[in-house]
Length: 136
Image (tube, rainbow, N blue to C red):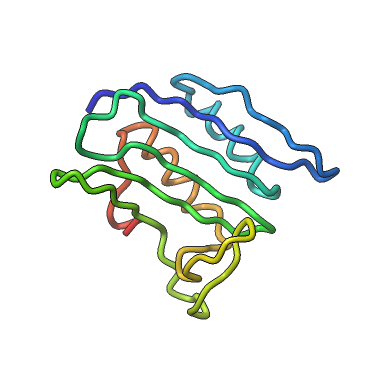
């Protein structure tokens, strides 16, 4: 798979200021880990897009963060021209809907463990995809 990754997004600092990240083209793993740490305890949105994405396959990995809760989305194109989204699955979720950035999402897609987020971003950076064992 060809890769031409761009990492970018924004977060709100503890003082409430919006901090826009300068897009990072083909970030190193160390760069990625430093950026991810900015999102661990802040409200924000982070995306890593593969600009060299083929017509079929993963296109962008997105992270929404709020109050120590995380929602991870991998958007991908399938062979039928459909756009599918894979997410983490929280087996311990209370069911129903939870708000993330003021919008309702299935509670099972929101987790409070940051480790799977790091794993998914590292894997996407390295391979251009994320295992279906991690994102369903």
